[in-house]
Image (cartoon, rainbow, N blue to C red; front, side):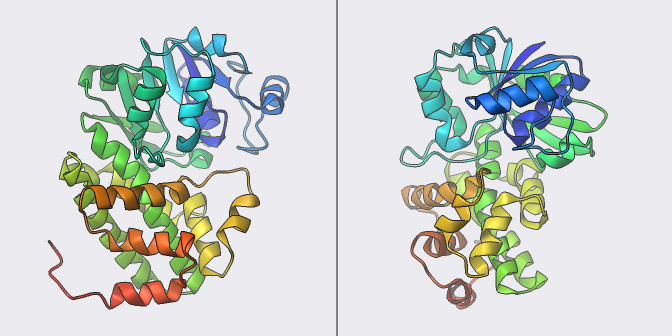
Amino acid sequence: MNIAIVGAGGWGTALANLLAVNLHDVVLWSIEADVVDEINQHHSNSAYLPGITIPERVRASCDTADVNKAELIIVATPTQYIASVFRERDFHIHDKIVVSVSKGIEQNSLHRVSQVLQDAAGIDLDRFVALTGPSHAEEVARQVPTTVVAASRDVGVAKLVQQVFTTPFFRVYHSHDVIGAELGGAVKNVIAISAGIIEGLGLGDNTKAALMTRGLAEITRLGKAMGAQALTFSGLSCLGDLFVTCTSKYSRNRAVGEKIGSGQKLDAILAETKMIAEGVATTASVRELSHRYHVEMPIVNQVYAILFENKDAMHATRELMMRETKSEIW
């Protein structure tokens, strides 16, 4: 197929390499001319995926016309920038299959990525697929065995994307629960920040396991309230992604939390890197969603207070431990 990827960051670049293995023709679109030049001239992307050679079948472009020629569009843009990217440029993707690999909840609107793209680009939700799961770009680019899920309202479209992406090192399952897949991939980043905070505070594996488990319970409660299937959150799009994001050295969200826990300030942390930790903005969005749907999310509330209200992280941990006792399942 002729495939365009909107966003030439680490994940977009890793997926371009993966699709080239299946002999697809891939164009990586970026607003950064220096990134485009490096990919085309040197077959590398040192800013976002260093140490990886990009195949000649992959080319980069700043021209929206190259995106419009594609049969399938992959959105690999950070969530908070998707609306502006698609509103400010002459993309024509409303009649294309659109695959999102972005994981976040838009601030203010509180929209999932599918809703953002529907508003900004007029996509057909029956031709939209959320491709998500435990899949660090650094490992996919090295062809480390990885499994993800393709979720679409139209299972036939999900199965098509499944075939496009499947390789001997990248296995794709399909699902029809788009809400659950998008929420799991987004909200687990908030819990990953909390796992990093635990590392920064010097606390132990017991504490991290507690946060991951109770964080999964919070995500599931919110998902059910928003119309997702509870079982989805035990799968790759949530539990699998939650585990890898809370424990991996590649996780940007976990790294932000670790620096917060060690006493650094959020503004300084975000200023020192080009890589975006989606969980920071998503924390504020998820907190608002929990209020809108009347879902209790104590871990999310404490992460918000630490990030945006300068709450002491150890004090927040104590408050979580000393909440009113109750049944595990409620």
